[in-house]
Amino acid sequence: MASYPSPLTTHANTTTWQALGIGDPPGFMLEACETQRNLSSEGRAHAVAAGQALRERVVAIDAVYSSQWCRGICC
Image (cartoon, rainbow, N blue to C red; front, side):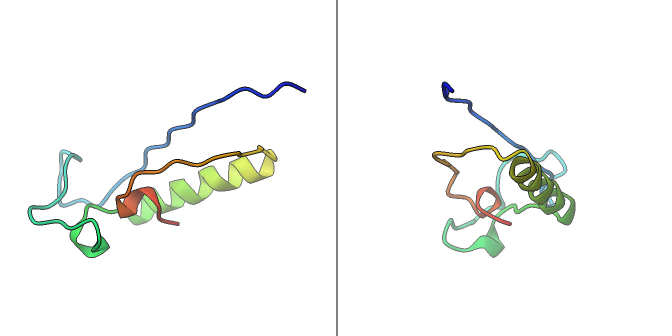
């Protein structure tokens, strides 16, 4: 069976301090998750559900690329 690259991008809800949902708080640091805009509890639930859906469908994953922000590597 042939295999083809298939990019998958997911977006989930983040914490509410930025009503516009853009950017990080002033003074954020990549090495300190508590200073960033992170996934909300709803966003974490969406991320977990997306992972579960991939596992249930036995999707073969050869590589994963993520941002360095904590919200991109959580769960």
